[in-house]
Amino acid sequence: MIRQNMKKIVLGLSLLVGAGLLSGCGGEKKAEDGATKEMLKVGIVQLVEHESLDAANKGFVDGMAAKGFKENVNVIYDRQNAQADQSNLQNIAQRFVSTKMDLICAIATPAAQTMANATKEIPIVGTAITDYEAAKLVASSLEPKGNITGTTDMNPLQEQVELILKIVPTTKAIGVIYTSSEVNSQLQVDILKKILQEKNIEVIEATVSTVNDIQQAAQSLVGKVDAIYAPTDNIIASAMPNLASIAEPAKIPVFCGAGAMVKAGGVATVGIDYYKLGVQTGEMAARILAGEAQPATMPIEAQKEMQTIINLETIKRLGISIPEDILKAAK
Image (cartoon, rainbow, N blue to C red; front, side):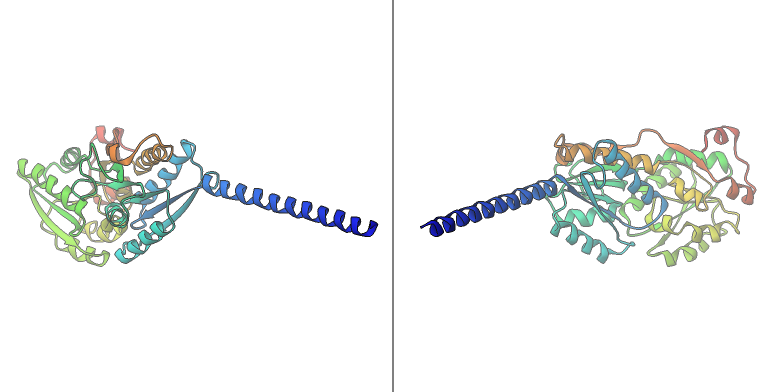
C-alpha cells in the first residue's frame, strides 16, 4: 500500500513538473512571437550605386530613426541594389513580396515602377523620382490613391538655365545628354527645351542606353555646343567622369541636375540635397508605419530649399570666370 502511494505521489509530481515545463516553453514561444511582431521589416531597393542615390538611402534610414524607427531596435532593413539591371529589380521585388515586408522604400523611378507592379498591398515610399504621375505611379501627386507616395527630386530647371547663362552668357547652343529610356530624364529635357526655346537657344540632344554610350554621345556634341546639360539621370550620374573626360579637354562646361554630379566633374548646379530628401522620405514612411497616414492620401512632397554647388577645380581647369554672387551662394 505504501509503495503504491509513493508511486502515485511520484507520478503526480512528474505530471506537475512536465506541465510546468510545457507552460514555460509556451510562454517563451509567445515572447518570441511578440518580439518578432514588434520588429518591422522594411525593404530598401536602390536602382544603381551613385552618390545622389546613396545619400538618399542614408537619409531615409536617418529620417526613420529620428521618428523612433531605429535599425535593429524595432526595424530590420533588407537593403538591395539592382546595379541598373531590370532583372535584378524583378528578383528584388519578388523577394520583398515573398518575405512580406511591412514597407518598401524605392530609390529612383525604375525601382519604384517595378515594386509597384509587384504589389498593390505593401506600402511603398519613393524618393529620387522626378514625376510620379508621368511614371504612372500615382493617380495624382496631391492624392496618390494607391499604395505609393514619396518625395520628388524635380529640378528647378528655370533657375538652372539662369545659372548657365550667368556663367556662360554667350551661350547659343546647349547640348543635352540623357538616357532615352528614363521617363524622368525625358520629362526634364522636354521642360528644358521649352525654356531654352523662349531664349532662342538651340538644343542639341545626345541620348544613351548604357554607360558605354556616354563618351560617344558626348563626342557628338563637341564643336556644336557652348555648354552641356546633364539632368538627374541615373546612367549619366553613375558615370560622370566618362562625360567629363570628353567635355573638359574640349573646354565645354557641363552643368548638372544634381550636386553629386557636379562634384564628379561638372561645373555647377542649383539643385536638390539628396540626403535631406531621403530624410524627408523616411519621415513620411515613419508616419505610415505608425498608423498616422496612408499612402493613398499622402501628397507627394518636394524639397523647399535648393542649394547652389560649384566645382572650383573644374572651373579653374576650364578657365571660366564665376560671378561673385554665385560664389557667395555656393557650397
